[in-house]
Length: 135
Image 1 (cartoon, helix red, strand yellow):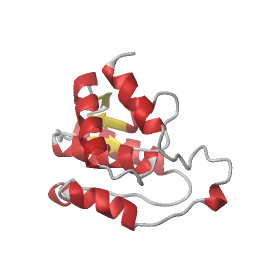
Image 2 (cartoon, helix red, strand yellow; image 1 turned 60 degrees about the horizontal axis):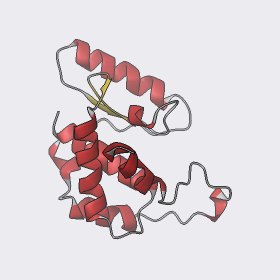
Image 3 (cartoon, rainbow, N blue to C red; image 1 turned 135 degrees about the vertical axis):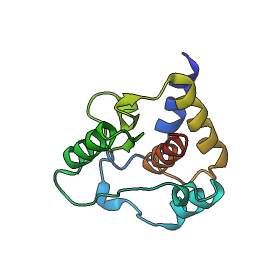
Image 4 (cartoon, rainbow, N blue to C red; image 1 turned 60 degrees about the vertical axis):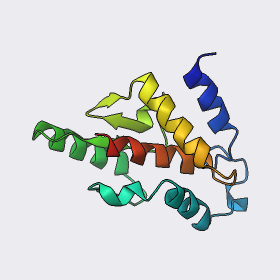
């Protein structure tokens, strides 16, 4: 197993509400991800962000925005969840996957700052933000 596969396996050991058999039993709290965000120095505050919320069409709208902004000459990071076929598609820069070293380095940094309560989503989300900071 290579480094990236090993790290993904570690991430998958975290609670994943996307595949949880009893999602209604989930404990949704902000303090867990807020702690992780603070330990990662609130990097999300240092980059311009478009945040879309809603129940339908977010992925499509985000992809249109990313393609339009990229076509205008900007470097664009895109984070979407869940993924469709490959988990690496959740974090993209200018329409492509991160290279394996960048992806593995980001996952390691997020895991190192973890206290163990954070979900799979929280870890991958924070990695996505860290990746965009480097765009």
